[in-house]
Length: 142
Image 1: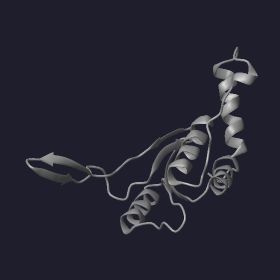
Image 2: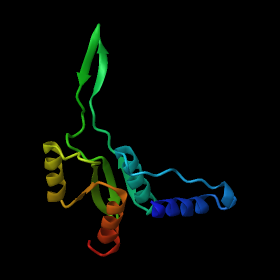
Image 3: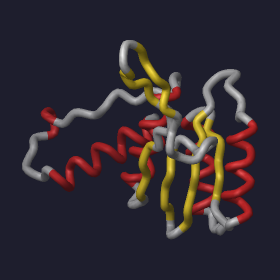
Image 4: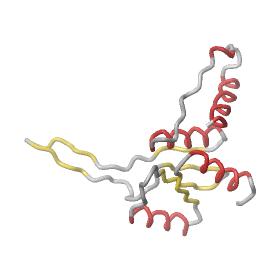
């Protein structure tokens, strides 16, 4: 996580050069939860001049007459948690914490992305993601 904090502070120094060092703050990063790991990855990609966004693909419940009605998502089932563009490549990142496994829809989505030449990665913690990122985008694997 230190690399992420260092990137954040370096970006902050560029954006706010007159801010005294003692006044700079950094978000609390954690990869112990799915939301925390998602934030870590998105911030890291953005701080490395990439584009990344969280994809939320869930249905919703609306009030209907005297009850409620479920409206399924209009998005593609199985879509990854993060959609990014890194070094000109389309990258989809699925976040899995603990024993969480890919659904059949997610496996089919992964296959579709890879068949189209995109990159699909399953992130389980920030350290492993960081190593993969360095190897894939800075180690010349592309």
